[in-house]
Length: 242
Image (cartoon, rainbow, N blue to C red; front, side, top):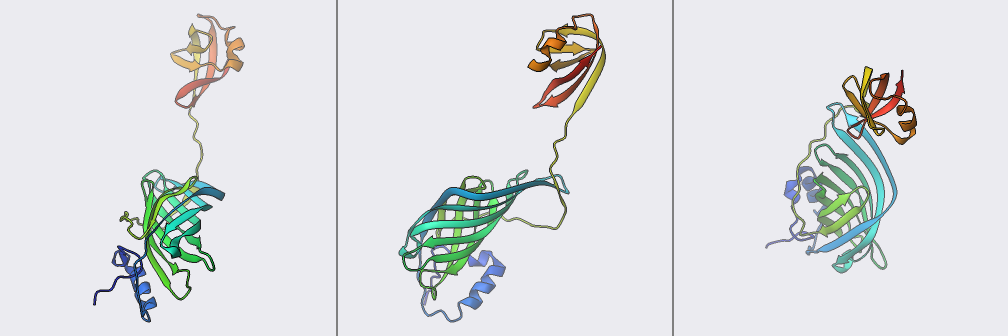
């Protein structure tokens, strides 16, 4: 007799550890039926984000947040949707992991599940395990969606979801990100001065409005010393003196 586990296109075999746990949990299963649903949860609240740099120079963004919206489909998957998500994303390579809980407000009793997904290029795909409206009915579902830590979940699917990427999570150090400023300086003759930029000894720097009156006192041919900082790819004057 061919048996269909809860939710269409379930790929428990793709997650070996999860498959063992699911198999043990279904030893007493007397019935099984397919479910499908969709969800969107784009209203973000209590979003807390931390950024750092890994030991191999990758930018890591860690976010905890709550995202609310609606779910539709099978009656057990229809209602207000709330997802609490913890995401760890390597933004340098566009890969990471998103885990958390899903609750769908079904009249009488909520459908609830824990999910564990792989993030790749703006989308998540993985497995959700919990219970349906009837707490005796176990829920096992492929889960996929578009995801951003600021915008939440879009075009979510429970069942009928597409496959995702694989990610390796390894131990290592992660230090807070620091902005590295590039400075430059020159001393010599002013070879050009347009008011909005100045060139001294071959170094050209953009002049912010606050320093333009002072820069105006250094005509072409005058001697000057300038100090500049690279801002958004442009050398910007910090100080000028004779």
